[in-house]
Amino acid sequence: MIRAFHIYKYYQGNQSALIDINLKIDKGDFLFVTGPSGAGKSTLLKLIYLREFPSSGQLLIDDKNTLHLKRRELEELRRHIGVVFQDFKLIPYLNVYENVALPLYISKEPEFRIRQRVFSALDYVGLVHKTEKFPPQLSGGEQQRIGIARAIVKNPNLLIADEPTGNLDYERALEIMNMLVDMNTRGTTVIVATHNTEMIKRYSKPVLFLREGRIEER
Image 1 (cartoon, rainbow, N blue to C red):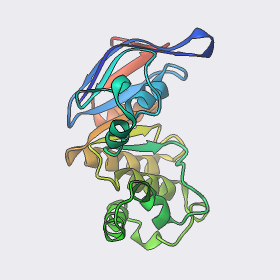
Image 2 (image 1 turned 180 degrees about the horizontal axis):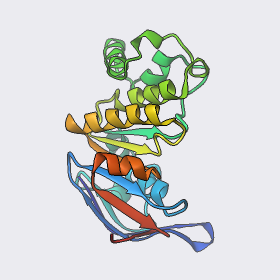
Image 3 (image 1 turned 120 degrees about the horizontal axis):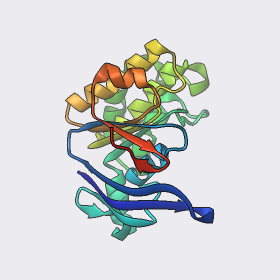
Image 4 (image 1 turned 30 degrees about the horizontal axis):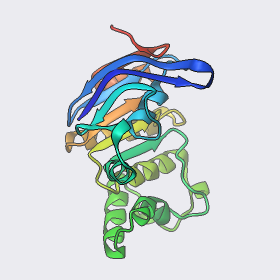
């Protein structure tokens, strides 16, 4: 599903964020990405969910080279990727229903399908009863569950979570992680960046360790 060949990523001033990354993630895999702050975890995820692109090397998603895709092809590929963020990134002036529906509005899905998928996603995270609430009225754990609902409303093949439990207490973090693991058991490929070594040990999934932009063998 994902293949990276000698990926380098540079920012302004020739600062190296990723150095010679080679990676293979198959459909249905679950992978933790960890390492110290500034190691390149978020940068790697941004390349995979197509927010940014490599400075050099090849990144293939579903056998498509991300550097050579036309805009329409990129948009189509993005439709199959869901993203969960540490800081939730919910829009405060939209209610729960509208936040979850947003990706479907953007892709111009018909209203009946939007309603069906939004309620299905909210049912999965246990928050159907919060449809009319606004993000500031929700707890941190509830906001992250809404973030997951928004990420899965498109039925993505690939789900990426960047520090999804970083702002949550241990019990809420477990709830979120259990949902991500469950999504994986249903066939979704899941990649989770985290500093939480306890969570990594608890779930016994493959781990990619980054240090100073390089994959470190362990």
